[in-house]
Image 1 (cartoon, rainbow, N blue to C red):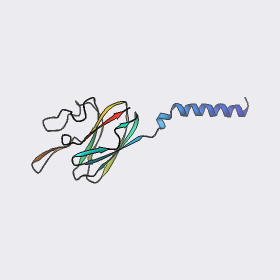
Image 2 (image 1 turned 135 degrees about the horizontal axis):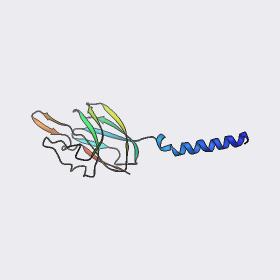
Image 3 (image 1 turned 180 degrees about the horizontal axis):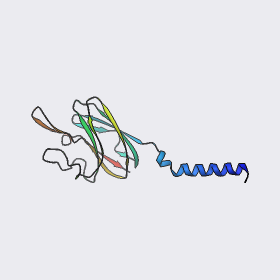
Image 4 (image 1 turned 90 degrees about the vertical axis):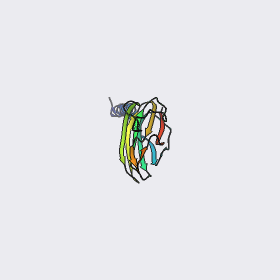
Length: 147
């Protein structure tokens, strides 16, 4: 076989291998999340299946968290525990979470998501000035559809 044919065959094989594994090198879709008393905002409601990076900024005064659940329950109707939080293990599949996102700070996480319905929420429950603050129940939740 001539050198030219070896180069061509080598190039073809290299191209096939790279294209077969392209998903392994695909960049993550970024979802920007903003947390603030008592709301959560996302710049995306739908993302493609695969790697998703959640970039979270806490613009509020309180410490918050970001919990990612895969669930078929409506994002605003997940049953509450007696203390006002949700039971993350029984509300769906806990995919991942970022805890202790302090005021005026941010954190990020990258996960691989399969198609389905997800909920992003803050599940903090705390006493503040003698009043129970249930972050999820107070509105800190958004749906996410992975296609």
